[in-house]
Image (cartoon, rainbow, N blue to C red; front, side, top):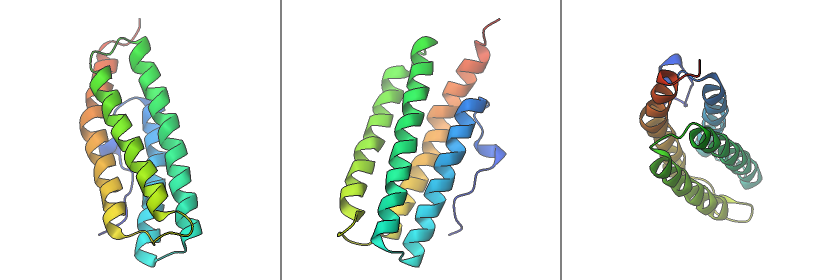
Length: 135
């Protein structure tokens, strides 16, 4: 399976969100590479920390935007965010220093989750925001 790569097909049409998504795509691609190359646990742990930090920041920014714009899907969207944060915390514990090596299953989960979330939840949010652009 080829590494995860950002493309315009992944755009939600909101520059700030797309920029943050690119960081997430790049970091998950690095984790995919780390899993296939059996890189050392310290490298994987650093990448997971990078991903967790970027994800939390992105989710915080996105949820603040949804809140200030009164997005009707905020509660469900935020719940989806929380589920991924919990999964990232579990991955950090499972694949951190002194633990087992990251496997392709974990990398595939992150890839699939991000693609599904961007193509569904975030595209819906992007369309809603674009339709209600302030005058």
